[in-house]
Length: 494
Image 1 (spheres, rainbow, N blue to C red):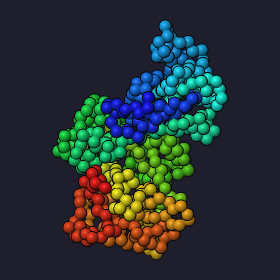
Image 2: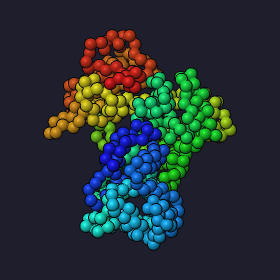
Image 3: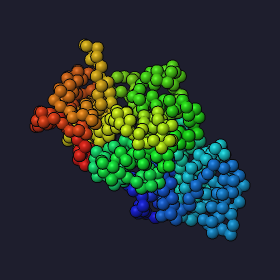
Image 4: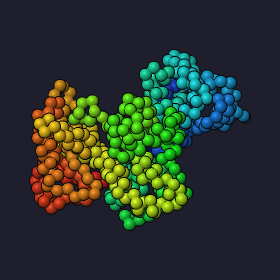
């Protein structure tokens, strides 16, 4: 099985396929365990089904069912895979797991259990049963080369499967997270060559592969002039599956029980309330009452908490899924009108909200992603370890200054200060000029004496979808410490 070729039907995912193929081709004796997770619609099922097919392995997709029905279905699938004259009788889950280990008795055999959380919902002790089955030295494990892959979309559940004192902690040889496509891969996947159009589409649907195919029936905007019409017919159209998808993302996660509260929290963040206090004020709760809903949304992969690198102990929240941001900012406030098929009117009235609450913040995230994943180290003065927004306080004037980008280098091996590679101003709908450069220069001066950071080589980064004034272009000419980033650089350059 060595060197399993990635099927042509799988776009991108080279790293994920390589890890799965390596795991499946492991010829060492003894059964092994792998865990694959990721939000729905990211292509996990396609990856694992094709892996099982390519390696002549076994694939079983669990469904919401009773324990007895799931055992019966699994026995039927095992019987069909082994060529038995009929279904294999599985008396209990201990016997079922041993039957899966027996599939790898003669050769390395990929065994995929997709939507594993459904099985655990009906059989709570299943992780403990698998732990026991994989006990080192147990004959059933030693005599097996089953490569067991457990997959699930309930991120909070899958995240806890190998954590802390969980039964399977220390048992897995693979822990793979299937993430959405990055903004460049998403543009290629959608077949969009215009960077401005690609950014506008990404701000709505992000990098979720399924939204390109099933959810809009392969309907992609043909150009910038078609973008508004595409939003109306593909996103704001009640007849398209994408229309209700943001609601379903919350409804599908079993840990998100109080959906009204979670929708309100997400609406607060979409409106620009990034701090816990700001969210609390927006939804009319006390800040100390938000610990649980914020944690649940984080565990579900819908919210991301980012520490402010310039303010110790301060953090902000952002929505990870662009479609949820778009829903909360544009669709939810006008839901009745949208259900009445007045999508065109809603979209015309929502242009300002889309630009300020959806496109602008997502463009900032694209620039931060570029700095970490695609920027040439020579451009930013080194490899960027992490990039985020930040707030810089001037103690002399007691004023605060927002920075759209703070790019930090890798932490030093010793106790020295961490390189502060770049600070930046990012704007979607405005040309940047010399005053913006001068502002960044003043903020860099404030950072020079700051302990814990080395700002001596900090670059001043200005990113704009509208471009730059001639004066700024002239001022930046020949200056290594000034970096001008436009859409072409974000999508094709370094």
